[in-house]
Amino acid sequence: MFKKIIKPIQEGLLKKKQCPGCTKQLKEAKELSEISGTKKLVQCKCKRIYVWDLETSTYRRATLDEEQYFLTKKAK
Ligand SMILES: [Zn+2]
Image 1 (cartoon, rainbow, N blue to C red):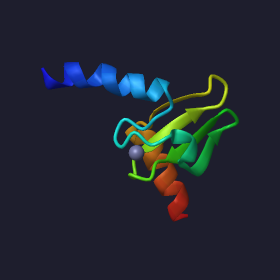
Image 2 (spheres, rainbow, N blue to C red):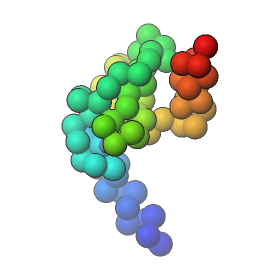
Image 3 (cartoon, protein in one colour):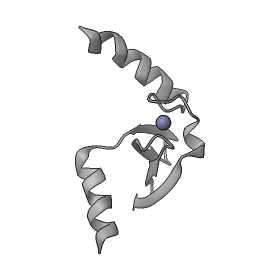
Image 4 (cartoon, rainbow, N blue to C red):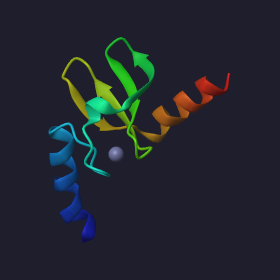
């Protein structure tokens, strides 16, 4: 019930390139690593991790796999 209301708001914020968690501009997010030539992993000041798609210039929440990928890469 609650999720149904929250989700469109979060997606709306992401479309405006704002973090749904803290509403900060995602262009200010810290670059963590490059997933591919067109995708970058960025981290907001509130520690949430997003995938920045350079081709479409959009942001979305990183999946657990993507977060793990970065964390294991960092540990090496
Ligand atoms: Zn944030």
